[in-house]
Structure formats: structure tokens, C-alpha cells
Image (cartoon, rainbow, N blue to C red; front, side):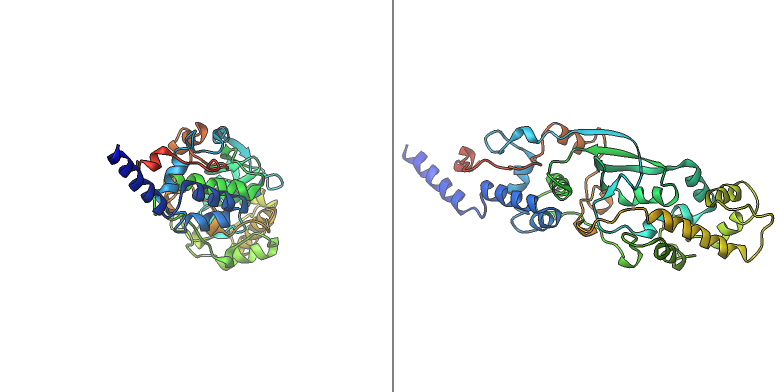
Length: 336
């Protein structure tokens, strides 16, 4: 009995000496969640947010700990094709890079005309109703050429009373997949090529300023490069598709000075399309956005994947309250 009392006393002391209790961590996370993605990312990257106990709290929402287990089963629908319609779908970040939107399809004649006729974006994006959560550049790339096109999307009913809290929930889901001490993945961009809030003429100028520049290593060639312009100014199938898209008369024969004028027509049309995207003044910077991209250290969120299944089955403590008030866990007292 004396040994048991001594053991309990020692472990109670160890628990008291812990830097943070689960209740403290859960309350701090809830405060950050309610403030939105900037505060949530800052918290998750802080010493408190990097604590191993928080990682465990997120991964295993237990009945004796979680403030509400019923709110952690998240509906995940699709993926299915949705309209990219910029009048309906809304960005949740305040930065979209023109080059990331157009560099690939505008790096080759076949790629450009194929995108125009296909009218479908590449890959799958993550949405929450009409909110773009992840995949803004794949979405904008489709709008750049075909605002009436479609893109594949996974629809996740992230918890939260507003877009900011839904982004915070997505960041928490990402944090649950990372090991203790791992910072939130992040991406940045060049303000000089940001298209949000800009008029068509300003976007057109951005495109023209990058002609013959290889801004995407995976693109078939530099932006509106000379070789593709030779093809597009020569009467034929690709030229016909392009001119129909531009609403222009077809050329009867190729001429040297037609390349630059055709580049301008393309840039102007893309500028008009991208200017349709509504800016969101309250949206966070791109670096504070959730990243479901393994290339930058984030988890992959796809139908049937580990993260999607964990969200659907409530295995991630993604929705507040994250802890019950005044919890005292016997396993903490026993140091287990």
C-alpha cells in the first residue's frame, strides 16, 4: 500500500510538472480555431502546438476526453465533376498566381487547344460547398481558358461557422497526420503575378510580360513561345480552334507580324476570364492556407484515402470542443 501511494504521488507530481495539460491544449486550440486559419497555424507551429500531447489529442478523440464526439464525423462526398463557375465558386485565399494558372496550357499549341476543347481541369481539388479549400490554381487554370468548364472535386463538410473556421479545421486535420514537432506545411507566391482583385487589362499585362519565359518546369515550353505561335498562326486545326475561341476570323495565311498580335488577343481573353474570379479581402495569405500537397509536406486528401476515411469515421478530433472541462484522466495520474 505504501509503495502504491508513493507511486501515485510520484506520478501525480510528474503530471503536475508537465508543461501543458490536455485541457490547456484543447482550450488553446479551440481559441485559435475560432479566430481562424492565421491564429490556428501560428498556434500549431508554436511550442504549445508542437507538444506531443496535442498530437495525441487530435488523433484519438476518446469519450472520456473529447468535448463532443458526435461532431467529428465529417461528411466527405465525391469526387465528382463540378462547374468552375466563378460567379458561384469562391476562393478562400487572397492570392492566385497568374503563372501557376496559365503556364502549362499556354506553353504549347496542342496543350492550349486541347484545354480549350476539353473544358475540364486537371486533377482533383478540395471544396466545402461553394468554397475552394485547396487547389485554387487548378481551379483558376480552368477558368483562365474555359469559365464554363468543369473540374473534379472532393467536397468536405468542414466544421465551422464561417470560411475562416473551415480553413482552421482543415489545418487541424493536417496537423493530426504530422509527427510531434512537425511544422504546418506552407506555400508562398510572388505578389507581382497575383491576379486577385486585378482588372482584365492588368492581368493581360502580367501575361505579356512573361512571354517566352519558362515559369513552369513541367510546361511543354515557355509561355506563348515562338514555336507554338508558328503553329497557331498557320491555318489548320489548332489555328481554327483558337480563332473560334477568340471569336476572330481565321487567318488565310501565316505572316511574321501576326504572332505578337495573336499573343495579345490570347492574353486579353485570359485576362477577361481570370478577372471574373471574385477576390476575398478577408481571406488569409497563401502561406496560412491548408496544404493537402505531399510536395510541400502535407497529407494527400483523396476519396478512399487514409485521411478521408479518418474524417468520415470520426477518428480525428477536428471540431471543438476538443476537450471536456475539468478532465482528470487516470492514465495521466498513473503516468501511462
